[in-house]
Image (cartoon, rainbow, N blue to C red; front, side):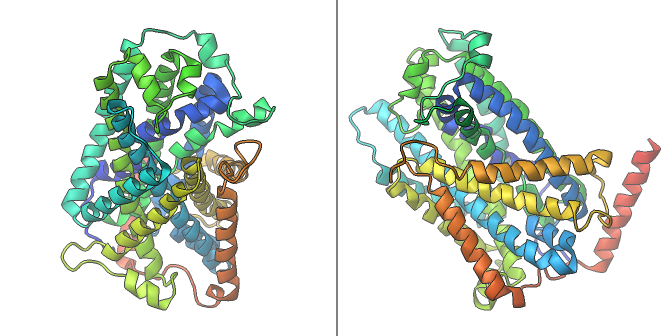
Length: 501
């Protein structure tokens, strides 16, 4: 039976995925990146294209989640859908890519918070010197607060509720300030047709346009969080897939509104790209409010708060995945035993929470020596998560094509088409985001995501083929037959009602 207390309602399940996606933090952090590589048109059309493709991924995942709502989420799905022959292999790789994706996402989010804080400091004190090591140390310090909040079920629930407010009310305030106060309105031609290739250092506008996809691609990861907390969600078979799908759809629509308002409100394109602040978007906040520092700092504080709640939700979701992975002995006997622990009082995986935060701090440490630390961490997070999304979908389309039993949320005749679009898109991103961003390549601007993802893949693969293959058998049973029958009965009743209607 479920090992966590089912204390989450739909708002908490939806809130954790909405927070993980965090359009405010992601768009604010990489908006100038998208402008520099694709121009205004790259930012807008890139968002639209990636949003549609992400809806395909989210829909395919929601369909699977409706059938298997468990804390293991992605890797549990791969195990079940891969069958006895391929299940353990796909579960192993899915789990480890899920882990690195969440860890890197949390690390990059911490950098965004640190950038927001130091940007506000710099606005108030222009002589203050901001260095990469200061940014990294502050980010690491902030990360420890997520441990304390995740140790208390009431605090994490209230935080998720506050996050929904920040991502709605905060977004509305930003839209009003940017769109309502800007002294300049760009034309539709500028917004939808103006391309730019400022940052890449090479001549191909097409390739540079594709690189601008990092902003929306990094935004649309993390909606698997709804599955990871499904064992803590009431009516998980129904609410978890709803949380996945609606968080992607809501973020796609609200994010497009934000990107459009920001792009129509650009005062000076060149000045914006030459922003001197750790968080370059501050230049837009200042320009659009006609140098109103108070309003600009409030908007930057909203960005920081959104990133904070995003990372808080990532630690929450990732700790559940680590707990489930250790439950199935994926870390080896000794380490798994230590991680497979819940507090006697709160029933929360406290050891897994600590490990999740510590691993994120290792990613943050990239910032000590790279000028593109945020982009590298964002790339690692996106590649890791999209790979973990693609593997169970691939298993569902191949090994389980004829035996998959759909839950209440299903895609009908479009299931396979949408699934293959999701798999192909994920494979494309794996390649794209490991390529160099800037030419000529130097040690400072090199995209270390290719090395880190490549090395990580080799290590995970080597451990599997030479060791884990003989002892990792995938998820162990922990849901009673009675619970399974009850869930299947409810889903059958709901499906029958839907058909009757």
